[in-house]
Image (cartoon, rainbow, N blue to C red; front, side, top):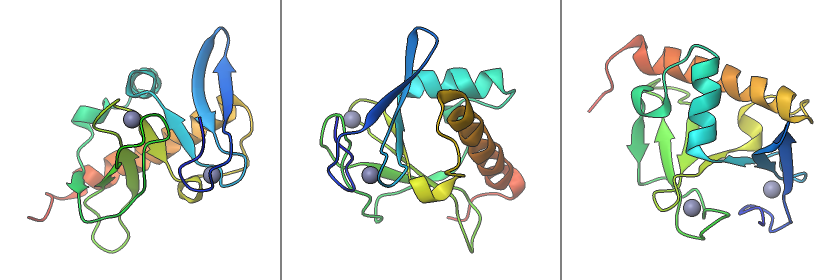
Length: 134
Ligand SMILES: [Zn+2]
Ligand SMILES: [Zn+2]
């Protein structure tokens, strides 16, 4: 699977027996399955992605899914000035996280997983801090 940003081959990271996520060594972007993400979120005591809030922004051009090469859809937290953004693929349900959006220090699956938890903890807090503007 190639990174949608830099077209380099991404690296698969596993936790135990399971493939957990795919990471680009170039930009630090992460791609993972929504089922795996929900498992991580629930384990951390967070709501699943569907219950997380946030709003889709079809205006945002965020590139293609590394798995099925259809356009990704950006989902933003409702924070006005500096919304947090993740991208989702409506075809395969995959989640793309921009490398710039969470700490890059992590290299192992466990470290990256805790970075993902931090990202969504903050996303969830912002998404629920006030009603989404319409
Ligand atoms: Zn990349
Ligand atoms: Zn996809």
